[in-house]
Length: 300
Picture 1 (cartoon, one colour):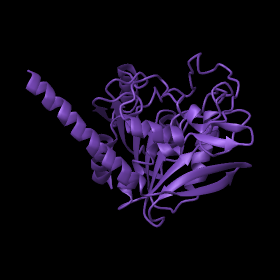
Picture 2 (cartoon, one colour; picture 1 turned 90 degrees about the vertical axis):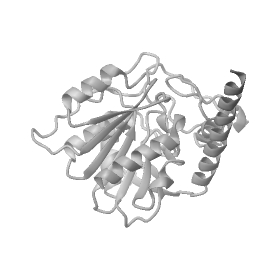
Picture 3 (cartoon, one colour; picture 1 turned 90 degrees about the horizontal axis):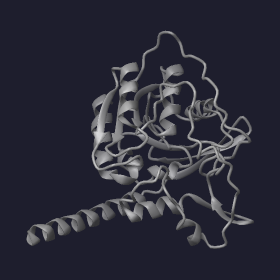
């Protein structure tokens, strides 16, 4: 029994070293940083690869940013021009006085106009999945493939926020970057599977101002969020080929959410990612890459 236990520990150590090497190699492929203006707001995005190739766009969740995909994106540059957008209130994009889901949909629409006219592959996480879903309902001719990563119930035309997210928070600043990085946590709370990945994402989530270090994201994003019904899409439209990948232990993409989405759109392929919570790309990055590669290649 003890020998078996030691073998398991050794196997975990080997897997951990292998993942760390893969992670380090992925980060060596640095993205270019781009900025554009949408309705008087500056928005930013990261890009990898050849801009003449078909676009593949990654969309982050609420209070996250484009760097959450920095270790994922380089795996797709052989076939795609890979981009990760920062919505307003996230990353180094401008903040707003108020936010609506329609704002993010319009930002995505403006962003795609910056790219070449080839069909888009869209991979979107959490809040980004909601944006991508509704974008596809009205701009269905633009997207060839859609992948929803651990979405909430995206079929609702009005965003329902938890009370704790709507609480107003006072902006604080830190003299020491490390002190702020150490306060990084995932929402909702979940295990941190890979410390180097978590640390990298935390480092990419802060910015230095004249008052000190703060989070890049607008900490009052959801306190300033106005939930209004989205306008209905056309009565007839061709929904893109779509996959829904959800974490085995997710608190966001629950069995009820998966069933509701599947009932509304039975053509969606639902895929469970084992040993993952809500933050799929941080929990099981190599498994997610392999899964995405197989699905995107199938529909390319």
